[in-house]
Length: 196
Image (cartoon, rainbow, N blue to C red; front, side, top):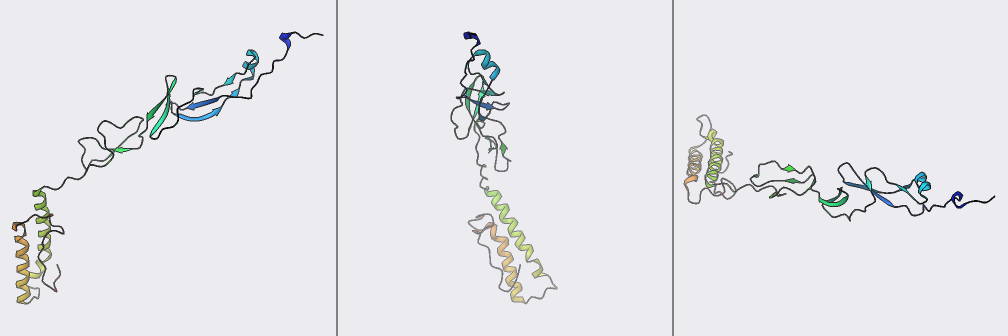
């Protein structure tokens, strides 16, 4: 019995499967896979036919770039800037503004910065307020020393009164408000042996 050419079994070479490149519902590259052969279609066509997974392409994505993500869109791969999770501030924000967080792909908004705006230096009025508040706290802390029922000799009582007067005069001294009552402020010394 003779066999015709149409009855001969064709050997199909499946030894070199292509790679497919998968992406998620947003087109973001997820993984590379080896394609599986499609035996039925291959037999019908007489050549290797490969199954391509859903959400995949045979087009190879570009090499990864730092701070970018590969996205498959409109039949091609693109590098898209990836700032997801980056905290930023916009022009007009101040040091007290909570940072915004980038949720989607793409560049940061125009003018955005990733460093919290600095607290502005206090104005002279604010420094005077701070100086007076600290001065008032120190005065209040020594009120008990001048109460009638507190035992204090006349010399110490006079020293406390001079100390308290020096505190009251501090905001009108030359150089005030200094640093608003901080370490650079020339505070008078409480008389030795007394606690504020």
